Length: 167
View 1 (cartoon, rainbow, N blue to C red):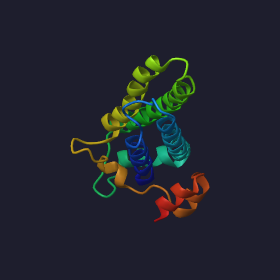
View 2 (cartoon, rainbow, N blue to C red):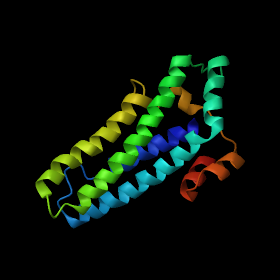
View 3 (cartoon, helix red, strand yellow):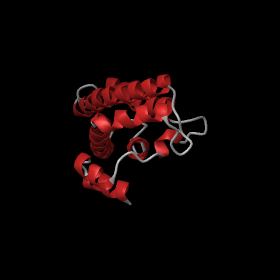
């Protein structure tokens, strides 16, 4: 879960660099595309980690056994799995829509500005609502290490993410 938490944090950090006031200049659109590339890279890494059978197995193990002071109830495991699935779908959909807004900006600048702020906010708010606690820190289960180095090397396609996880 620690590595999944790192992806969630990475997405949040990338989104913080997203132009919030809109994309009304070429520079802002270029910066936005760079951020979207980074978000997509974390999305791919996150998807690879959670689609690995070991992930769900480890979560269900937290139902049966306490690990480092963390034990989850069955509904908490289900909520986490559903939350991550929702986030993956949301990222796929909204990142593509944000790219479309950038591409279509010159044709519909007013509509683009309104849609832009909403889409960026939805991603960030969903992550905070589903995976952070009231102190705006990742929930305690995201501090557990599920994957060993060789598993990470197999699962994580992004070299920068892999280096971050192994540090």
